[in-house]
Image (tube, rainbow, N blue to C red; front, top):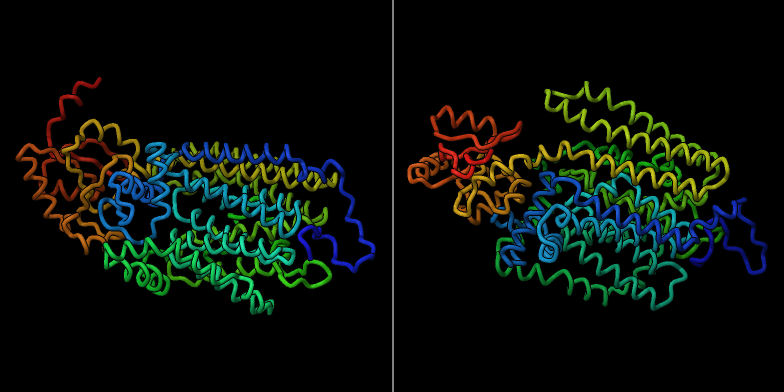
Length: 593
């Protein structure tokens, strides 16, 4: 079956009459063929995505952590040994740190710059998914796939958060798209070779992003697909020789260089961070077996009403004659296996399942291209219901979840954003219902996509009322008014992931290990392991007139008071207190009105 064949058409013998598809208005059928509309939508998608990267504070822990790793790489010029807070940090490979450091070198330091690579990866993943849908299925399926992925809550949110999840998902999307395009029955020999090389290169970049999952997951999916389809000859079409050479040429050099400089890195990275973390609990990331299933449902908004049809699309045969390569089956296996794989892990975080959404978007696009008007009305109607519930539930959440006055105020500040998002979803669902009645399916899909994209960005932008507090950004003016290059800054019993990035300098950890345990075992001089050591250094510097600052929790602050440690409060909020060992404010601080 060729890529030009429409999913609604069967592969019929030559000369057989081809049944006409159902009636579709001319204006609606032309939407996916309009180059002007495609370029306008793509331009708006890119502009809004990139602009939104800079509207929020970097929220700890992930956003601050990965922003700081890139900043330290940029400041030190060491692109081999990755560090966090000046301490060796080998939990993840360096691709995102490289790209962040490169971004800083071109555009300077800032929130937008820290998220730029993530945003670009989100855009790239949408383009690859749309192109795969267009090439493997049909132009309209590609149009639908791009709209679905670009508006799915999980994908949009992951593309706006500075973590490794979107970077990994984008590389895995490229490997999935490359495999689909290369293995389709209509592919020429040159196309198969070139797209398989894209697949191998993408897997190498995925490994440089997050480790062995970059090749283990696609490899396992391919094995399962082979068993399910009995397409044993696919292994002869993978260009294994050239592919493996390209894979190791891209992925291996950093692992060799970092091991030469840090002999302890291979065991920690490959054994501890992969097998021990996957197989053993104790990482404070456990979750029930249905953890990711629960996350998948809201993550699929605004397309939740089409989820059953999307899953069924993976089992339907494309056309009357069974093709050699079965892309729908591969997509279904990709979705199910990755969900099961991470559900079986002892370590669970929400971002782990971001790579399933491109496959789900393609299956949803196939379903949208075949569902009838009744199913479109059901999916659109569910979106109306969800939008209405979202708008109605926020006032109840304000009074039902707030634990103190400050939190109550933040929920009230967030309420308009949630109400606006709910109204947008309600409007998009209603518009899609009206268009479905008029049999304008493409316009209805576009209405749903626009509502999902806008609503998710509203929810993200409004979260700033919580993000500023979690990052401690409001403390910065008071801290920077006192800090000098000679000032030692301690972080007592905690580590402020984002605040460290905004201070543009590492801090001295006191009685804190957590993710730094391995690095501090290699470089113990980079922290003060005991609370008593900090108190002694604090008092010694105070007596010598050397200024120190310390970031402490309210509980630690009470401990210091109980031990009679002299200190002056510089700034404080609900989560942390910043103190100085200089009891008199600096002259520049006293002169401020």
